[in-house]
Amino acid sequence: MSLDVHQLRVTFGANRAVDDVSLSIASGEVVVLLGPSGCGKSTLLRAVAGLEPVAGGVISWAGADLHAVPVHRRGFGLLFQDGQLFPHRDVAGNVEFGLRMAGMPAHARRDRVRDLLELVGLGGLGSRRVGTLSGGEQQRVALARSLAPSPRLLLLDEPLSALDRGLRDRLAVDLRDILTRTGTTALYVTHDQDEAFTLADRVAVMDSGRLLQTAEPHELWRHPRNEQVAHFLGYSRCLPVAAFEPAARPVGVRPGQVLALRADSLVVERDGPLQGRVTGRHVTRAGASVSVDVDGIGVVLARVHAGDQPAVGATVRLRLQPGALAVLGCSGCGPTTIC
Image 1: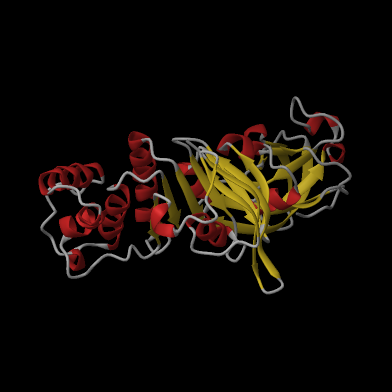
Image 2 (image 1 turned 60 degrees about the horizontal axis):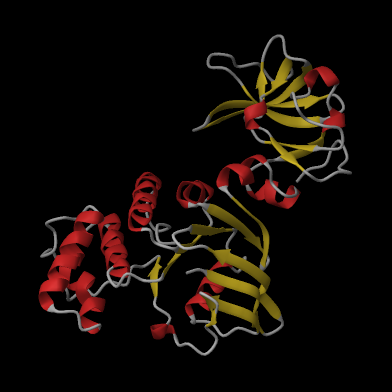
């Protein structure tokens, strides 16, 4: 069983919110749509759910066209940023709602609800009013309710975006574990890269209504298809290999390739093969870094070791860190190309 989207188009007037998108999701696979706000990822998810009319293309499940199938007959589960829980029902009542509507016997409902609450880490809280729960606990209830009918496909639209950073990170790990343990096929929408890389079997980067690249997280991170993808992933500069002297190039790169650099792609080291002048100093939660103007390359960011804080105007030497680089397949970028 799999979802197939072929050349899908969704339009709002003259605007193509989803522009000839093709995407497949295999049984048990979690695919994350990643992109900036307004790129069309939520519209694509809503079209798959049947909540948005399509202007062209085909959405099919196991080879069957879903065009004429209404939302409630697609067998898909939905989970949004606001879990949309029923405030007048307790936790168990929220989780069992869909099971009751489906006519499942009472004893089977009780067993299913108990098992799901254990699965999402809320065992023993079935009698609690949902209004007394934290935001993270409420989203766990919403997840359990979405999983209760054993949906063929679970569609999740920014379900963690209203939570604080620390809780969001923890729930992303838990959610990945839950989806894996239940073998759930899922399409997940987010603008958060950490969330996407934690959850996904494959990440589909989207912008301006189009899919730019779909790949496993490791492959996407190390080999963005183009500068646009690299820029979105946080690589701030794209430079051809030829911009670096042979002694400074990482092992294995080839002429004509382009290196994408982020803040930790270069590090200040006394015996580094590159040299430049410090033009600025920065401190973030990821550590300290400096801006360095390197001859023939331009201004780049470089990490500094703990306790090493070169002054603005100082001359420093730098070394590329192969594990923090991405290699693009494009060519023709000038030495000062900025993504």
